[in-house]
Image (cartoon, rainbow, N blue to C red; front, side):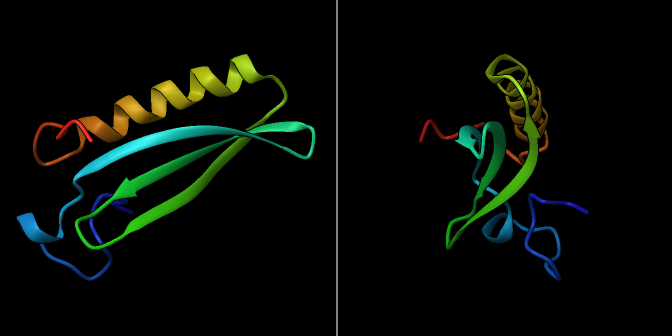
Length: 79
């Protein structure tokens, strides 16, 4: 599954992701990592995983964000 492209869309600049970022949120006594994929027309948010410590969640979020940004079709725009 390619999260950086809307489902059913072919390769093309208007449909490709513009940016990817992660966030760490405290929910129900655990730290949850979310991945936000930003397209020109919409933003999609995916819940990745819950961790018992904030440190583990932040490490995972950093890895996930770097991997997602590596898959972007062009350099980040600095949003």
